[in-house]
Amino acid sequence: MESDASGGKVWYEDTVAIVTGANKGIGYSLVKRFAELGLSVVLTARDKSKGSKAMDSLKELGLERNVYFCQLDISDSASIRSFAFWFQSRFDGFDILVNNAAVCYNPMGENSIDHAKTVINTNYYGSKLFTEAMLPFLRHSASTSRILNISSRLGTLDKLKNAKVKALLGDKETLSEERIDMVLSVFLQDVKEGRWKTQGWPEIWTDYSVSKLALNAYSQVLARRYDGVVSVNCFCPGFTQTSMTDGKGNHSADDAAEMAATIALLQPKALTTGKFYAGSTTRGDTVAIVTGANKGIGYALVKRFAELGLSVVLTARDESKGSKAMDSLKELALDHNVHLCQLDISNSASILSFVSWFRSRFDGFDILVETFCAFKAKKGKEVCGLATVEASCCKQHFYPSLY
Ligand SMILES: NC(=O)c1ccc[n+]([C@@H]2O[C@H](COP(=O)([O-])OP(=O)(O)OC[C@H]3O[C@@H](n4cnc5c(N)ncnc54)[C@H](OP(=O)(O)O)[C@@H]3O)[C@@H](O)[C@H]2O)c1
Image (cartoon, rainbow, N blue to C red; front, side, top):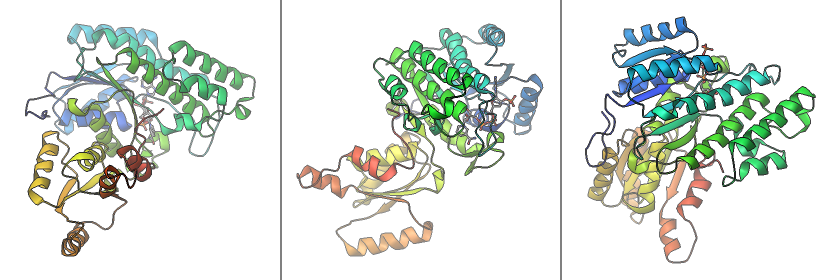
């Protein structure tokens, strides 16, 4: 059971999560993870027999107790209506919706737009229609109501070369569903008239990327609509071994689901909205060392890295202060991949002992953040705020915000 900083429970058995497209891949792994964490989960699948098979697998793992199955094809409004009816007759509301279901008809390395309409209708309009149909049943709580849209880095704004479309979708204050519809109809018209390659649309898996671009933009609209009431974020799992990638990828569906669960279940204190989280392709293998991390920027950065699933070494010159920081991370359920080691960077013996401790546990690190720079910034010698540190150290690993 997850608990909040005061030790109170946040996720109960009556916390209800719905996951779309959950008969296999990341969706299935996410249902499994939620079930392991003690939530009640609705596993949905468009194919009834595939959904039943997924339920059988959960049974074999002893995880089916609080998992409920219902057929749902997000591209079919009748199926959405019948799901809503089924849901209403069994539950008095839900807390978490993960829009995971998606299609992509391109094998790796190919870029056909033969199924553009289906891809847009499923990945964007399907997820949107399902969300809108279920919103009346979403329990409104600033701390526990969440929508997580499983998206893709392929659909971030930087993949667009079309300046007009970029400007239309990039202004998050004026972004609207109508504007997203307009962009999509321009795209589908470009497809129909055979000029989609020259109009500055994303170059990899173009139709899929445009569908995710729309999903990201819709997430911004929703985040604004429900600001302070429901947290709405996007998450890109990174290159994951599922049928969508012909089994290729840098990590398993279980790994991707663990990252997604971390984002979906952020502690109320750490809760965000309107963000785009991207899983690192190497995630748990990515090791970050943060010096002077028992408080302030260093501590905040360790927390952020841990939320994103990196392995982090928290260092502090005073071991007892470091232990206290570890206790705080424990209360936030973020201590899983955080390791404490005493380190006084002004003391060479301490540095040598840190190096020997590090060598005995890790085969290398990827990110080193010296918060000493931040200290110097205070003295006016060097400007190195948290944002700068995030940008310079972690750009390849995650994007704190889409816009
Ligand atoms: N794998 C990656 O590298 C990667 C990277 C970035 C983002 N993502 C995103 O991660 C999410 C999960 O993908 P995955 O990799 O786990 O792919 P996957 O194994 O192909 O799973 C996709 C799931 O969506 C379901 N689905 C498709 N159309 C549906 C519809 N109309 N209604 C309901 N369910 C439908 C599929 O059902 P069927 O079995 O019936 O087809 C399947 O359960 C997707 O949103 C994808 O875009 C994946």
